[in-house]
Amino acid sequence: MLAVVYACEKFHTYIYGKSFIIHSDHKPLEMIHLKNLCAAPPRLQRMLLRLQGYDVTIQYRPGRELLIADALSRLNPIDEHNEHKLNTIKDATKDDQELVALTEIVVNGWPERQREVPQAIRKYWAYRDELSVEDGLIIKGDRIVVPKTMQKDILRKLHEAHQGITKCQLRAKASVFWHSINRDIEDMVKECHLCQEFVGHYHESHFNPRRSRQDLGKQ
Image 1 (cartoon, helix red, strand yellow):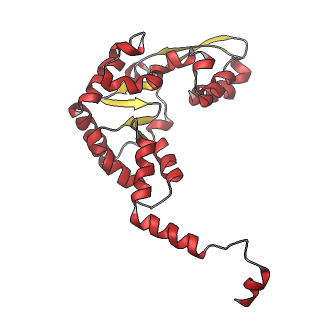
Image 2 (cartoon, helix red, strand yellow):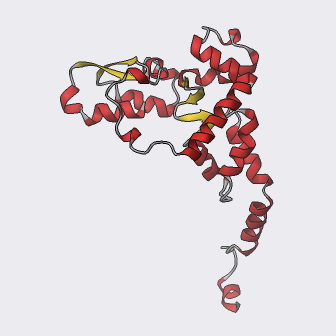
Image 3 (cartoon, helix red, strand yellow):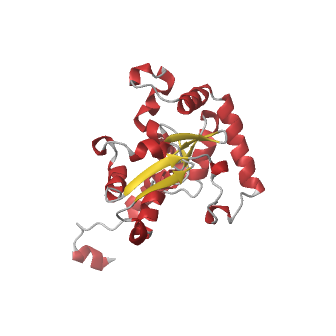
């Protein structure tokens, strides 16, 4: 959606006041664009508001039918290492019963009522418009939905630099997703002995503004 907003504003001079169609290989955009502002999250509301001045229709078209390719996205092909990772995630997705059920409902369409969704995947209802299936992977926006068996490994990689909760969550927002990822990151950082040891040391040596100038002068 952000790419759509950017493109409209970039070519504002040429398209403003005219009806036009945007073809995208990201199917959820069709429904996201029609989403009621009151039902959209704040970040999406801001993007939808920026599109209000344009007479735009978003139509889904499979990537293989988009003959004019996005050149920038094809400048750096996936190297063998990353391709192996993607294939590993695809295989794990096929073996994850929850994601198999989620794939089926994303491809075939969501029911009208939440209670009609299988219990195991009902937690995905809130962001159903953001989910799509691309080449064996479930995608939420621009993030890959990670199978259960790979989540611990992903958490370890997110925290390998021993950054805090917020920074680890920001790293995750750029690439990966599962339903409890924010809570899992928070628990992981709190259970990291090295991080907790550093935090304890920091608080012991941290400057105390309540200490008097005389005390500081004696040091």
